[in-house]
Length: 242
Image (cartoon, rainbow, N blue to C red):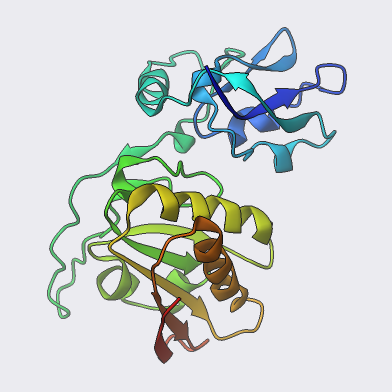
C-alpha cells in the first residue's frame, strides 16, 4: 500500500450515464447495478481522465493509502475477451492501448502507396497512459489536432520514428493537458520533444502547454517548436531550451 492519488466516486450523485467508463483508458471503472464503480485500485493511475466527462461531478481525486498502479495488470485486464458488448462492464475497444510495432520505412515521395507511420494507439492526450511502453526513451511528437489535415505528408515529415500525442488547447482543458504531459515527460526519459501546431493564435497555446509541462515535470529537456501555416506549408521552426 502506498499514499497516492486515486479516484473517488460518489454513488449518491452518480446517474449511471457511463461516460466515465468510456473515458477511463485503463478500464478501472465499470457500471455495476446502474452505478459507476472503481473495480480495482491497481487499474487506476490517479490522473483523473474520467472527471471531465462526468456531468454530475460525482468523481473526485483523493489522496489515500491504496495499492500501487500496475501497468501490467492493466494490460491483462484490457486484453481480456469482452464478447458481450451489452455487458455492464463493457469498455470501448478503441480506448485499449496498442503497440503497433516499429514504424514502417517511409515510401518514396513519388509512390502512390504511402504507409502509415503510426506506432501506437491511442494518440489523444486525454486517453494515453503516461506509463505506456511506447513512450519510454522515445522521440515524442506533440501535435495539434488540425496539423495532420493541413500537412499533406504529415506521416513521413513529422510522425516517422516518433511516439505521438494530439490535442486541441482551445477545445480541451489545458491544465489537464499540462499535468498529463508532465507525467509522460517525467516517467519516460524522452530522447527528444517536438511540438507542431497551426499558425492561428489559439493553436499556439499548445506551446504554452509544453513549456509548463516541462517545468512541472522537473526534467531538463528542450523542444523543437514548428509552426504550420493554414495553407499547409511549414512556417517558423525554432529550438527552445528550457
